[in-house]
Length: 345
Ligand SMILES: C[S@@+](CC[C@H](N)C(=O)[O-])C[C@H]1O[C@@H](n2cnc3c(N)ncnc32)[C@H](O)[C@@H]1O
Image (tube, rainbow, N blue to C red; front, side, top):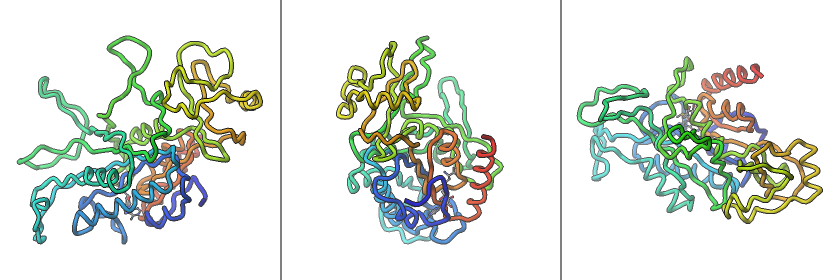
């Protein structure tokens, strides 16, 4: 494994080849969209003449994602769509008609299901601006357009994929308050989410708002994994008091990760108590392996690192990170943002 907590200046597939099989806990990324921006660098993705060529490249990358991802891992793929502009291209299909919305993100998602065998758990709609047509209220912001013969695009897809049926997912970390019901438990945030765009002085035009990787990492990247076998340690909030250190959570999890469910040995209990892994009140821990080798943070990968937002957020959330970025100028932005973050510690 190449050293972690670094961003490498390289092409995405070249970088992915350096990663061993089953080594990454969580992938959060946004490749360039087809025919939208020129990142002014050779080998960039997104400027292919035909959208099929673009889709093929993204699928090759997703295949590598599947290889490097641990069986317990999660993939969060943000993709925006494009409208076809004829530009004198030889258009021979019904699909490639001038003005057509191409549905590229969904074509990619379907190929990931059909050809790669990935399991799609959610297609999250990232809402950038919404309107209530009854009250005529609106909120959020998007780049304005002068288009008059269709609606402006105010949302993008974030596909949440896994490669195995049993995977790490911590819903407790992304629950939102049930204000309407005046009860303390949070609720599932659902699959239509506003991640407001954040203003920035950096010279990168497609930056994630920090809340987007924060959401994906909190839900999909374990805080701790076994140092030896890499299996996630899962903390689960439960009601009532915990009187003894007990990994058994069958009552509350009702089989979701039942095969991982077991009681800790007295030796393990002693070891984790000493290392202050004692759960806080209302928190139980699932220990899914018996290596007894201690723990390290989970690893987040973003192979289209851009301005470094995923790395920055991973660092803030005490996860490890690794990333690739083709454009050297962006590496400088990443270094600056990360060093500011590290110096704030
Ligand atoms: C949509 S931006 C990612 C922005 C990022 N999420 C952020 O918050 O700043 C896509 C990035 O992929 C990079 N890129 C394009 N083609 C690439 C390739 N073949 N390999 C690696 N990076 C590439 C571009 O330079 C660009 O910075």
